[in-house]
Length: 568
Ligand SMILES: [Fe+2]
Ligand SMILES: [Fe+2]
Image (cartoon, rainbow, N blue to C red; front, side):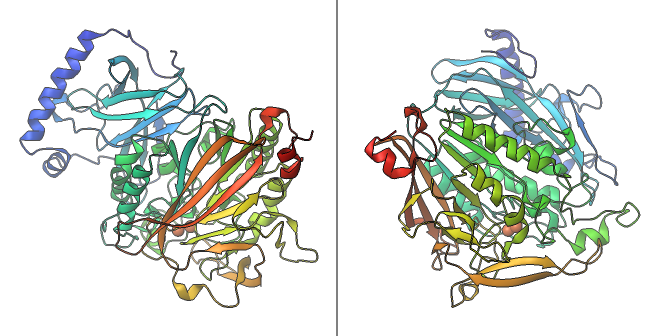
């Protein structure tokens, strides 16, 4: 085993275990005395020492301003992320309300105990609205064995460890696996002045995902809606602590949505997102790290992108933040960030998709993004900017599946490719009408899975009749101080294969079979829906995505008929 980050110490460090055990005993006594994290926070006004004003980030182990060991609060908000190679790379991330001493992770295998310590890197930001400083820690594990179970603990001096476990991704097409997905979750309890969304289902869905036992989970943006809260730090804290009972046992891989844009926190408002997650690199400007990235699991290349870069909609505007962030006007803050990457994301996306489609080890290309290219609900609506910038690339490189959110319901499309002839709004052209069996060599299947938990779910009245597509085609005048209004049109929705108008909340499972027979690989999709306030997530809809496996040397454009007959 090798390590790309952090200091590796010997694997047989019984002395270090003793040290940690001693620390654990100290911390356990404190916990049993009723002074856990909440008690420490209540008794220590020196928490949240950050200065108000513009947000800042720092990286690297800290040696200054470390709190006394005896006052150390325990780790919290623990969650995992795959590295670029899910078979060998994992990162564990957590947070503390104060800077801590020697944050680190110890790694082991079930039945064999812990043997390896990895120092964590520290990343910090200061919330522009409240001046609170947030301390996050990230321990990167590399050189892991494929398809293997690991156990781990994160801790620091004076704190009881917080434990988790995980399984690495399979090698190539060696076995079946499952992943899950939803977006637009929010938090399970009200925070602060209750400005942000919350619902019990934002908690129930975590248990449902954990019960499904996926290898990993895709979190399709609009995570906790901190950008509309008066208490954004506590909102993030609630989000991660709520998700921790699953996310510390399997990676929850996100993409940033419009509600991750917290104006004032970094150039695009993504600084809390970038600080709190430790995601695969994209090789570009470090200031844009995490906004887009890709990773490989088995024979799937998963590409996570940030649609605020191309969307027309002004989706991050918050009058609360505008009116209360010190220096909002003087510093020229602006939540409308369309085009912020200057084409860098598009260039990276094209290179990434091209490389994936050329890679004989990759069968499926799955894109995880937030705003949608098609929607038949009068909610936000789809965004023409995505059709203009992304869909030609999806067509050119044969993206099989898109998972998204933003619309707070479930809807999926037939395979789409190209544009309906004569369409001025670039309506995607439907390729096939079988809603149960989707040939992704014919076109890309888009899925909206936006019922993660937001209290404002898409109401039944939003699904009008006739069954039209709803599209944002431009925005009206706006400014950093007044949100741009959207201009919406409707279109025939021949592409709409299924929409769930019966259950407002839900998530989807994706069961990947790399060798389904007849030269095919399949992904069986099941959407599970739940009623408001119910913890019961029941199957509502299912379909199967099919494409040839490239392990037989098949080209991508052979189609299913050729694959099924073994033709070459
Ligand atoms: Fe949302
Ligand atoms: Fe959204």
